[in-house]
Image (cartoon, rainbow, N blue to C red; front, side, top):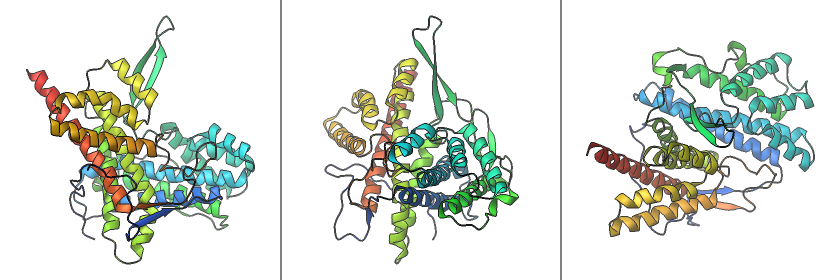
Length: 415
């Protein structure tokens, strides 16, 4: 398929549209069916995230892909997709090995997102499931990975918010820690190959496949290697600046667009298989781009005190509605015509729908909560493209709001 330079459609929120709009006669229906076998459902999720990461990486490294700038942005969403596929598969293994709901809840809550900690628990339960050399490589690799990303947020957000108490031990003082604080030329081929090598091991482990894994043998268990072929390098890392959110927001929006575009251009029976595989990863990529846009507006385009901004972002975390309510007064200040205010109501409705559907940024990522309760209690149907367009429309509108607020603030500053 010939890939267009820009896969973004100029779709924007429309009054009356719903996130789950679905025509029963549509040929683009995706069914989400909850299973009682949680390990298997986690494993299916992991395969879908891994498949989506592969698709985007293949596109990015294609010799006919001539936009080298994408290497520096798409890296973030690719890294998350691969990383998340490992987390899901390791947790699937954990729920295979650990019996009893209370013990499973304890395992999920105590290991959280830390891949090295999850692997440590699994090794303590069953030390001889895989060959020693394989497991030693995986252990070193996940240890190095978890040193950079133990909470599964280093590739979703541009910085961590940290705090310490003031000298009187009364007030919290907030600061930010940028993930990549210096320019780094990442060898994307090695980066992807190591994720795939790690996934080969955990995939065989889950399936109880006794054959040895081979992809790890030619690779060092170092998470990030620098260098490599110039047209396969991701250059990331700069000191903090006002554009720090841009690369992340762009990465998540455009890679979601690519997955949607890819499915749209598949012909025949493979189309339905592809839609089923990438629906939830695509939705999560869009959802994170929306959250990032709201946080970018709040953090960069409002006049609030830096400490207040950090405290709110740390407290609300993934709340789409909470973030929208914070930036709404700034939006209505510059968009105040009758037509503008009507449009803002529609955008607000989209934000509220997404918030009500997924208020903790987990519903597209996991089949169940940390208390083993399914996110989907009953069979659900979605129209792949209508839901994708709904989420892209919201992301597009927030991008326009951010641009307008930036222009307005620049104008005020110049005056």
